[in-house]
Image (cartoon, rainbow, N blue to C red; front, top):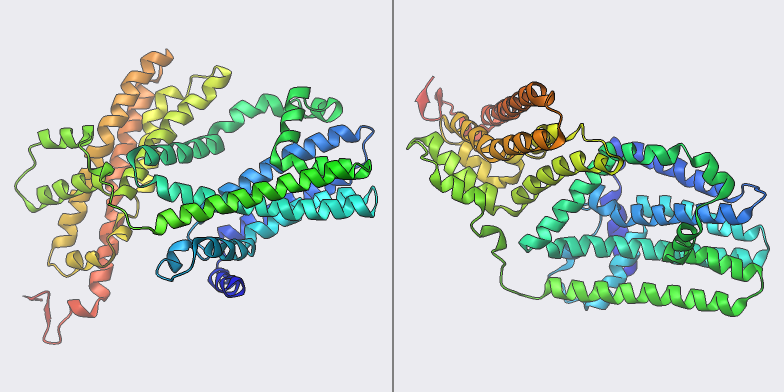
Length: 448
């Protein structure tokens, strides 16, 4: 079964290396080769080099664990593809693990983890073989963590608290990628000192005691001839991998077992109470607005996108507070609107075949887009305006009032008007559809 799943995984990923994925794959391979090159660097203090490599391996393990979440979790074989087959959970977990190892990101990580073997062979054949075993175990650990993270996030999406945690993680990732360099800039200026003196002892010990640093401990023990310690490290590594595999199998069994549907996302929220106070017009546009407001608080993916926009805006303003910089707080509302517009720029993709109800109804596409625009504005405008009005006085940057408010109004207007592109898409689909044209010159039941 493992061989079959590997072939399925390769077939599903065969045409995936295009565009952005190709660019990041090249960047990943360059960084992986740089990690290997660092392992053969000759330094007067090898201990410092090993400490740096242990920190790099921790980073590689985290990247490998989070890659399916932020880099395309839908690619490759997933457990739901085999949900209807009578496969025992442990056997399914082993098969999916074998399929997951054969992929682009695991290949990049394997090149980086090969630094263990390259470093070990500099001290002899036996430390080199220990490095090979440690590299393979490190790859298994990273791939298992990736599968566990993806499965746990899927389970967490079934509850409101879990959805909030997932949105917080996404927002934290986007905030760190956007403004995290504000915080690490002082550390970057001290790289020369770190290379000369190494990490402070507590940090160095921390990275070595992490599972990502066990391989370096095993090579060090093998180089000193402490084979008992080397065997103990490998047994601990294998035990950790086996425990994670059993945990994943248990999660797969839980995910496949029938259980009542959670209605956590359908509870009355502040947005639903606000919507109930609105007196929407008794028109087709008002009906679409009411339908969209209910969808924004009931559809799990829309709820998740809205939470991601909120957390991203808040964290982009809060991360720089670690170094005492408050100048981004007045613009949190603007960031919320920008993220909300970005994440909701393709709402029609979630409609599926229901889109034809709009396409095949005369004049409905203009009404539907206009209603979605107003609903989007009603969802994002209150929270973004509230964040701006509260955070400007808290930051003490009163000069930002005209700038932040003008940018907020511009982004709200631009985000709302972005629905014009959707109108063009629906109109194009309506024009090209053979169901919209009749041979007798009638279109949509009306004479041309």
